[in-house]
Amino acid sequence: MTQIRRRGVEERLPDESQSAVQPALARVGAIHQSLRDVIESELRRGILAGVYVPGERLVEDKLAERYGVSRNPVREALRVLQSEGLVEVTPRKGATVTRLSHAEAREIIELRASLEGLCARLAARRRSNPLSTQIRGVVAQGEAAASRGDIDTVRLMNDEYHALVAKAGANRYLEDFVRSLRARTHWLFVGTDVERTRASWREHAAILIAIDDGDQELAGLLASRHVTNAGGVYLEAVGWSKEAPESD
Amino acid sequence: MTQIRRRGVEERLPDESQSAVQPALARVGAIHQSLRDVIESELRRGILAGVYVPGERLVEDKLAERYGVSRNPVREALRVLQSEGLVEVTPRKGATVTRLSHAEAREIIELRASLEGLCARLAARRRSNPLSTQIRGVVAQGEAAASRGDIDTVRLMNDEYHALVAKAGANRYLEDFVRSLRARTHWLFVGTDVERTRASWREHAAILIAIDDGDQELAGLLASRHVTNAGGVYLEAVGWSKEAPESD
DNA sequence: CTTCCGTCCACTGTATACAAAGATTGGCGA
DNA sequence: TCGCCAATCTTTGTATACAGTGGACGGAAG
Image (cartoon, rainbow over all chains, first blue to last red; front, side):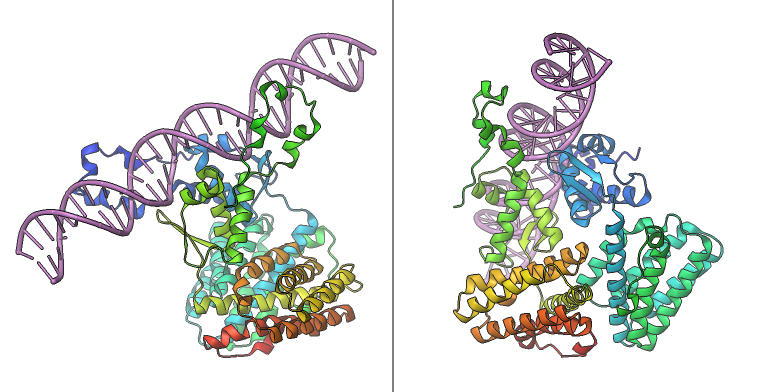
């Protein structure tokens, strides 16, 4: 599946390599994405989409063959994904898709709640945020999609919403961290029912209002609670003692 | 310099490879660290120690030759360091040691202040923290080293202190993030004078007391302010408007 | 003197080859 | 029959080779 076109550049005839007479080819270098990048996003997409399930082994050779590249780009992609926490690598045994323990899941949700809260608070601090209208549009689209049960769009808009709020916090590093945490909690949404989805978008809307009002405390609290709510089903299932969520 | 012993395993005679009669050699596999790991920590150490200065190009070939390995481990190590933010890689141009803009420095300190505050708050939440005595020891050592002007020990203990407080927060992901941020702000300490160092250890001690008292708000506030203070000299130099630090 | 173009060189991107460690399976002995 | 050992296979770790890009340098034309 998904055989990636391979080394298109090499398909040029030898004599063409000297003169950049063909503009389409001349720009190949600029457009060219390294195979590592391609493999990296392909693997990430696969993990997030559930093509590769938690605990599954990711054998370099197999992946290289599947995507039609050598092992080198695959290895480097795996390193990147490892540092993102999506895969775990044990020396001389290879990589597997990360499987979180209950405790780890709890910790990751706890932290995500804190950091999303921080994002919202920072966003609220900056009055007249230029991203506000953009976020409003996403919320509208998300609510609409939730109403008609369009799961794919809902997930897309959900990602977009959180990305924008993080960006509105105006701290690149926080933004990065939150993105990383969001990627690692994609499994939160697998069993989400329609009602919870609608509630989620009501929360999104409420957070946006608080941000626009410049109400830092409220925005932070709502955003933090939003994550906790989304994680609620999972956390209760593993018996999380709801200790002091209000202190974040 | 720092030539790493290379492929010691291969130095075994061929017949030895069959029988594990020599215990010392038989255990090589278990002890063996991959070259990538070695190169990675070597490069990280180099960057943090100032051997590689911000903006400096890190050419794969040169590094490979310097450490006596091939380019492959070097490349992978660079990927890891890239994801840690210590090096920047531009496609087809190679890696350089990250050089932060003033805005980025401000953001990173702002975030570190928040997250260290969160660590301290979480640590304070967990009464009778088992790491408490350990931290107390580090503080004692750090204060002593600061008094006698032993910079190396001070830096060591400082790192240890922050690592332990992060650990006391009992959230592995937060711990990772804070470590990453700490690594990226090592330059904060280059021009630190003796007086600031002493003050820093007084703050460390005060934070610890608050943690032991279970005073979440105070611990968080002190820890957050501690980072802001440490970054103060730098931030003032680049003209940071001190807006609402108390809201974290 | 400047500017443009071509050539060359340094470097990265990718593939392939081989060595070492771990997993597996089959046979042999107790 | 069960367990242990060895041979084999699978997979990772590392090295080397080569292709392609981007930049630097130098020469020629304006």
